[in-house]
Structures are given as C-alpha cells and as structure tokens.
Length: 142
Image (tube, rainbow, N blue to C red; front, side, top):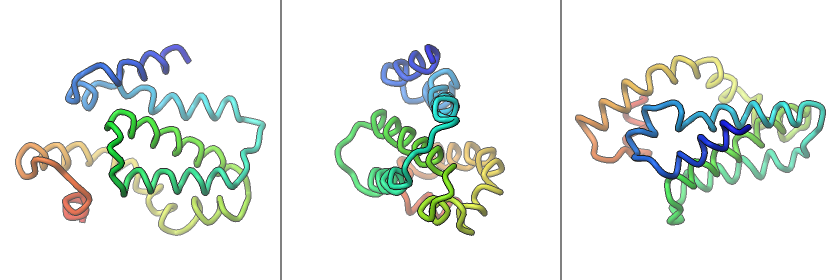
C-alpha cells in the first residue's frame, strides 16, 4: 500500500514523458486494483456502483471539464477499479456491462492491444499528430 501511495504522489510531480515511460510512476494503476481486490475479497459491492463507475469513466473520457490530466487519470483508475470489483457480483447490471460480447472480445485481445499501443501511439504522436484525440485514435486502431 505504501508503494501505491508513493507512486500516486510521484504521478503529480514529474514530467509527462517520465510518467509515460517509467513504471514507477504508473505503479499505482496496477497495484490499486490488486489492493481493492484483496480488501473486497469476501465483500459484495452493490451493482449500482458498477453502473455509476461506468458512467463516471465515460463522462470523464467524453467531456472536457477542465480537470488536470493527472487527476483525470486517477479518477478513471479508481472508477475502473470499482467497476471491475463490483463485477464479481452476478447481478444483471454487471453481467450487461462486463460480460457482453464487446467486452469479452476486448478482454481476449487486450494483451496484444497493450503490446501494440506503445508502438502505434508513440510513433503517431512523434511523427503524425501533435495531439491524439478520439478521431485520430479511431483511425490508428482501425
């Protein structure tokens, strides 16, 4: 838990390039999910939190509220963790959000997407686009 907090604190105080390439600044993203899974191992989270978490993630991704990028990242990570942990319930909302064909398909290809995203996005950022928005992302991943 201490390493998670340290990583989170460093996330707000280093250059963007360092945060993107160095795992110690992104460690909280990985460890937060593990910590929450351990804490809520035998507890149930109400399915309404899954729906609320999915809505928060979509709203943060789709609309610009003037939230700093660092804080936006933290909010998305926390909302995603709540969504995934609440997904362990066999409730209709969780099944709809996490077990539909699209999500299962993304889950099956997620590791290869993870491996390719650095190559595609980093090179596109360096050579094609100054800033990659949703339209450019769709073109790159299409």
